[in-house]
Length: 260
Image (cartoon, rainbow, N blue to C red):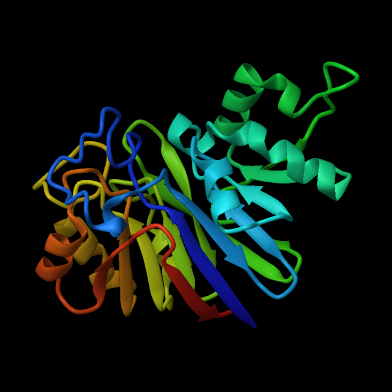
């Protein structure tokens, strides 16, 4: 079965440019430097999934003309990955039923605390739109014809959920892989879309450096490593010329096809 992955957004929490048209070192004339908040679209012939709904979610879905969703997966509770959750309402309306939202317990508690109406109807004109499914570490679930396997990521202040779809894995946000079993969950992947938000640094508390990604991939063995979670400190063309073969810089709209 063929799967198509579209990187809808590949930036860190500020977006690129930062508010006030702050491009940092990024060339504003390079379209691949204009980045929206991290989100991944996964499509088979019959199933459409999304990972994370950041502040740019509505714009992303309109840009790629995504009219229907079968489920949503969340990596963690931070706002740059959840702020667009209300824009899932139209998909629940179209489906005429609640969408299932796959997330860990910490994320579900955060959504329930701040947006209880998402899970529970509080007014006749605003029905609930999501049914939470609490993921356990290293669980595998199936949505339609797509199997989704989880792994655990160390994001310093919390553990995030990484996802594997066939031979492709998505590991955002992270400064490192958490738990030895995560390497087992990633064994055999061909393509790894991974947080390299600290690409330009020698160390950082929340996001992985490029040296860390190289070190981790020596164990994981992905042939294609796509670096995402990119700030305005990382220019597309400059970074693309710096990295070795097998590594590449993500950009909004990058598509990857894989066999599940």
